[in-house]
Each structure stands twice: as structure tokens, then as C-alpha cells.
Amino acid sequence: MAANNSGSEPPIPEDDEGLGGVTHEEEAAEAKGKAPAASTTTMNRSGSRPQLDLSGAAIHGTLEDRNPTILLPNQSDDISHLALDIGGSLIKLVYFSRHADQPTEDKRKLSTKRRLEIFTGARRSYPVLGGRLHFVKFETGKLNECLDFISSKQLHRGGVDSPSWRSGAQPDNIVIKATGGGAFKYADLFKERLGVSLEKEDEMDCLVAGANFLLKAIRHEAFTHMDGQKEYVQIDQNDLFPYLLVNVGSGVSIIKVDGHGKFQRVSGTNVGGGTYWGLGRLMTECKSFDELLELSQRGDNSTIDMLVGDIYGGLDYSKIGLSASTIASSFGKTISDNKELSDYRPEDISLSLLRMISYNIGQISYLNALRYGLKRIFFGGFFIRGHAYTMDTISFAVHFWSKGEAKAMFLRHEGFLGALGAFMSYEKHGLDDLSAHHLVERFPMGAPYVGGKIHGPPLGDLNEKISWMEKFVQKGTQITAPVPMGAPATTGMGGFERPTSKGDILRSDASAALNVGVLHLVPSLDVFPLLEDPKTYEPNTIDLDHDEFKPSARSCGEGGCQ
Ligand SMILES: Nc1ncnc2c1ncn2[C@@H]1O[C@H](COP(=O)(O)OP(=O)(O)O)[C@@H](O)[C@H]1O
Ligand SMILES: CC(C)(COP(=O)(O)O)[C@@H](O)C(=O)NCCC(=O)O
Image (cartoon, rainbow, N blue to C red):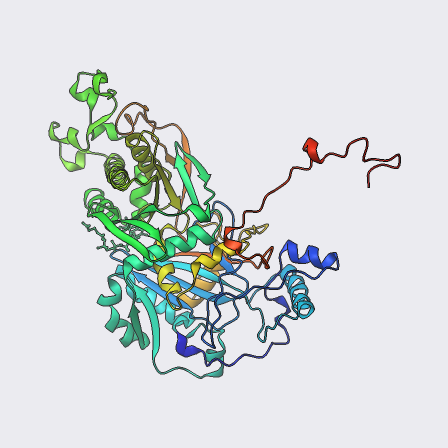
């Protein structure tokens, strides 16, 4: 909402000591009495237009959090607060909020930071405010709840804490960036209900921008998930492109990404998240997506799927590498049984369906990776849902068909790529610059949000519910997801012998309709700001224990080494 900002610089509030923070490097430099490196906390600030300052971006939360907040410690402009991705199934919101409830520890840190700014003569005429990126989703069918949420928090006007809201100076024409089909379909409704215009951003542009941002700027964003094991992947920022991005939303888009803004949608399939949820709902009468997913965790697909052994009289078809327990035909067994739908267990139906769709997506993705010679495939979209079985099935398909050559990777902010891309499109940020920044991840002692059941006082109106929920969501029911046991030499995940391996956890959403998360960006200084080209600089480390660096007898006098 560029209209929100007049360009004038707000005065430094008396009580802003609690806002922002410093890194260990800053504190260490100060402790040594050295001038720290010049502060480079602001990126791409041009003119008086509000800018998004991504320096020091980091996740705030534990490694297990899904869609955690991103802390933006150095954000000082009154930036656009809200962007939307209105998809076929879900509406995704990304919004920025300033620090309002800074812990005392950070107050101490800001004093250090402000002293540093004085010390270095950094010309900062506005306070370092810092803030967070929040991630929220609603079902598209419940658009009114989403509009109520935006309205209750006044997100379309920059939030209830924004200077323009507090001063009562409301812009006439508020513009919110939005992507996804709903940006077209529901534009009139947004105008009618909130008085805002939706500025449409292309969905593919946004998916790519969101993925590039997360992969370049956020540590512990990407991970592999194989045989129930999750492993974070260290992304080499200088060697990210090209990669294949597969967004599994209602439908599936497959995009070859070659750089920032450089991509091609190379394929897609209409068998996606909407197919699982739609068919699953019809066949099991589940009332929510999570209910359907949970059912699958108690399922046994061998009652539904036709296995190689069913066809070969219990034998393997080893000549072409198929074990007896390999699925020969998803849902194939139901044709020979003289049974009705109601004779099958919903649990088994859900598992067969989930496996069929996940495996198919993995296989199609691999074929596209093969077509373009790509080895890395990142999967996003809310179908993934951080669900162990889904991720393992996709990973298995990619691994099996590529003979281990290609790798499936997943993203913690899986469903928010488009919304993040729309958020960043307010200003065209030079994302390449991110690689020059030192990114730090902080884990709080007690993570405020771990997802799951809500414990606390009775809920009042929606606004109260939301802010309360953001603060007090506690660890919820942990559901053990089954992990497929694949015979490595067969196509298709082996036989689904009843999975025994303890998989990851399906964390229930904060509510069936709403999922809230936050991601924080913590501050940092450039380590060597005078480097000609910080992007290409590879810091080396020296092992002081190495013989070469150990003091020799000759260099140590009797009084010991100096
Ligand atoms: N709470 C939920 N409600 C509905 N679908 C969900 C939910 N959580 C995950 N999903 C899955 O996510 C898919 C939508 O993913 P998303 O990336 O939001 O796509 P879209 O942009 O098409 O809405 C659904 O089709 C469904 O498979
Ligand atoms: C049309 C879409 C881009 C819309 O995105 P979505 O709301 O599903 O996230 C997507 O559903 C899609 O790519 N479908 C597959 C269409 C096809 O290539 O056959």
C-alpha cells in the first residue's frame, strides 16, 4: 500500500529501545572497542518510497515449525503490509507487523545497536523498527472469514499500529497486491467489503519469486524427506539455478527456474491437491482435508490396490524388477470384488488415493526434470501439508525413477510461495543482494507457535481469537504418519506392507480453516563490507588444530606461546 506512506520520516519514539536487535558480531566488535563494520541494514532504499528491508531475514521458531514467522529486524519504512494469493482451494495471506511485544533481551540489544549507529556515524534518520512476516491461510470457500480477519486487524490499512491508522489519515484508494485466480474472481468483493483494489500479479511470477526468496534468504527452509527422515539442505546461493519447481495446489504447475524472473512453465497436471481432497471427500464423506489425511494414517491400501502379487499368484515379477508387493494398479482391486463403496474402509481409500496422487506427481516431476537435465526438484503448495507420507511417496518416486540421480526437496513455507512473491512485488527487490547478507537464525527458548490444539480462554470476536491464537497456540495432537516401506528395486513404493516406521508428525492446523505462522528476520552486519564483490566471496575457515598452525617448540619460548 504505497499510498499509506507519505515519505516523511517518523520521529524516533521515546520508547523504541525494545525494537530491533544486534548480532553476536556487533556485540563482539563493541566489546573489543573496535569500530564495527559500517551498518548495511538497509537494502535497495531508493528515494522516499517505502522499501522492504530483507537484510538479516531469519526464521523465528523451532526446526519443526511449519510456516514459521520471518523476523525482519531492520525494516524501518512503513512498508506495504499485506499480500494475497487467492487459489482454487485456499487463500494465503502474508502480512508484515512491527515489533510490538519485544522481549527485554531485545531491548538491551537495541541499545547496543543504536550506540553502534552513533559510533559508526550511520546516517539513519528513522528508527530501526524490525518486524515479522506472518503467514495465514483460509479456505477460499470461506472468503468472508478472510475479509473479517483483514478488517479486524486493519491489514489493508497497514495494521492498527501503523502511523497512518493511528493518525486517522486514511488513503482514498488502497491497493493490495494479489495473485492467484481469485485476484480476478473476487476483485469486486474486495472493493465492496473493504474498499480496496486488488492489483493483480501473475501467479507463476509470484511462485518463482517466493521460492527464490526462501531458497536464497532463509536458512533451514528446504529439506529432504526420505523413509521418514527429514534432513535440512544447505543451499549454495551461487549454485541454485536451474531447478524445477513443482507447485502442488489444487492443480499442479511444473516450472523450470533459471534465475530471478527467469523461468518457463514446462508442464502441469490436473491431478493434484484438489483431486485428492475432492475425490477423498466424495468417497469418505470427510469434512475436512486434515480429517482425510489423518484417516490415511490408519489405512491399509492392499484392500484397494491391485498388487503385482495379486496378478502373479503371490510371486514377484523379478524380471522387470517388480516385487509381489508392488502396486500394479491403484484402486485396481475394487473391480474384482463384488463390493460397494460402503464396504471399503475410508482409511484404506484415503491411503490409496494419497499414494496414487503423490506418486504420480513425483513421477511426472521426475520426467520433467529428466527432460531438462535438472537434478533438484523443489515441491511447494499446500497439498504437501508437511505430511510425512506424502513427502516420502514423492521422494520415493523421484529417487526410484531417477536411480538416485534427482532429489526431491520440500519447503517449510510450502503453501506461501505465491503470496510471498506478491508481497515482494510491491517493490522490485534485487534479491541477488540477499546473498551478500549474513543470515542468522534464532531459536527462542520457548517457541510461541508449534501448531495444534488451542488451549486458553474462551474466544471472543474474530480479532480477539486471531491475536490470541497467534500467541497461545500450543502443541497439539501428534499424529504419527505412516511411512511407506519400499523395496528399493521395485517400482512404486513396494507393497505398503503395513508401515511400521514412525514418521513425521501431522500437526493439525490452528483451526480447520486457519493456519497462522510467523517468520522473523534478525539483524546482521556484512562481515566484510569493503569487499569488492561480496557475492562471490567464499569465506575460508582455518582449523587451528591443524599441525601447520600449532605452535612449534621453536616458536614457543620458555614462558609459553604468546
Ligand atoms: N485446510 C485445507 N483445506 C483445503 N485444502 C487443503 C487444506 N490443507 C491442505 N490442503 C490441500 O492443499 C490444496 C491447495 O493448495 P494451495 O497451494 O493452497 O493451492 P490453491 O492455490 O489452488 O488453493 C488443496 O487442494 C488440498 O489438497
Ligand atoms: C490453473 C492453475 C495454475 C491454478 O493454480 P492453483 O490454484 O491450482 O494453485 C493450476 O491449477 C494448474 O497448473 N493446473 C494444471 C493445469 C494443467 O497444466 O493441466
